Length: 374
Image (cartoon, rainbow, N blue to C red; front, side, top):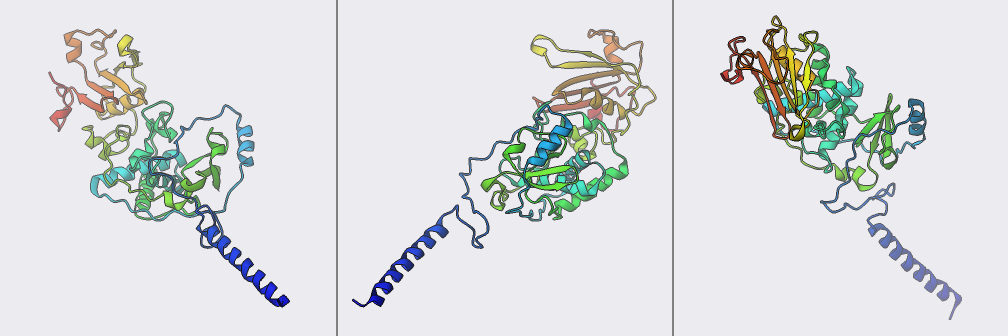
């Protein structure tokens, strides 16, 4: 047999092997994408989602945290910007979602539009991801019913008792409106987590650092859960009221049956010292607060006082008197003292109940449902 026939046979054999190898390689779901530039992970079963860990910080000094965070590599491979988001609902639902998003922006980033956009993008990314609640307010206040475990610390550390200026709040609302109508922050991509560079969450080493914005570091999940395919969940267009937003957003307050003119300044902050009676036995954790209120203060400010003193307690009973003579000295009160009560507030997160009531013989209310029963 001529030598060229041997070479021809070997050539065809090698070509056949090469074709088979290429076909197998390209059909492998963990192989490169059609551009051959990055892996294309397989979507896991729909009921298998990554665990969302609480924002728990390692007990280390700020300088040590910065050094440790700097050692985490910045991964730019596979970086993808988020698709524009359009909120599905209208009316009050949209306004409540806007206010939840604006609250996250301003309390996490301050009165800084650049930082607010990054925070807003993370909130929207989470709402689209199956590991998180499927509404804007649900994402922002996830875990806020506990003193530990909240996803955004401002929702459980008492920060909501502070107030920014009306102008700053309006700016945050406008930015939130823009993001609910399609504005994106391309600098943070598909990040679902972030933290400042001077703290060290325990989850830092389990995620991929993909962006740095000023002093904030942004992270995504590795593998499929950090790819565009994971961010296709439908987001609710019917955000309901959130109790912790009542002092900030009239639409949340109104839906909860609370007054919509909540004062930004606590006019009762310097009035008689509050006395807290802690529950015992089966009532453990069910605190009752007794306080003297300022007779000259706007009655709406009583709600602000109650929210400040109740903080993030899941159960809180607040009772206030403008008459210091009739304010009880103990947790026992007679009929005259009870009738003289000027204002009461009750929160029970477990029962999903929150109500503020006024003594309408002392403070006239337009809505009789806000009056104490006599």
